[in-house]
Length: 164
Image (cartoon, rainbow, N blue to C red; front, side, top):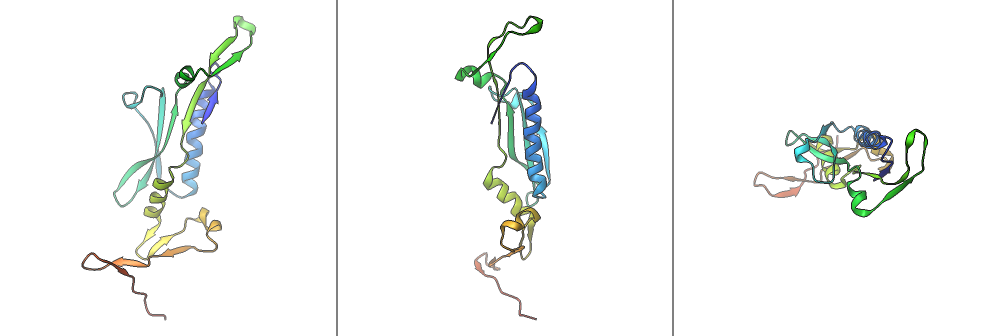
């Protein structure tokens, strides 16, 4: 969440920074993604501009929303009466109180991100741990499946291959 000055164009710059931070996060996880500018007809009343960051889900061969980033300009601030006092300045600026601009962005929707990581790193035998997460996994680099689905569709313990 960001509160920005209403009079210097910073809210748009901050919006680009927010979606850029989200992109860096998913890039660090090695997740294929794209950023989509949401068309004005699909925006709610609050947002003047919105980006969605969509991650690739290989099982369904589709991109799905992981991040939503909105610039609500002064819509929320007017309803909440959140203002900034602007001093009188050169060039005829009369100063006074102005409603701030408010921006909202999710960095990660935890469950959707976990699903995306699992789908992108899954192998027939388990899940590879993304490089950036290995320091948090106590040396674990691969998580093997413990169960599998048999020919009847029943979940059964996975047969371990004989030791070589």
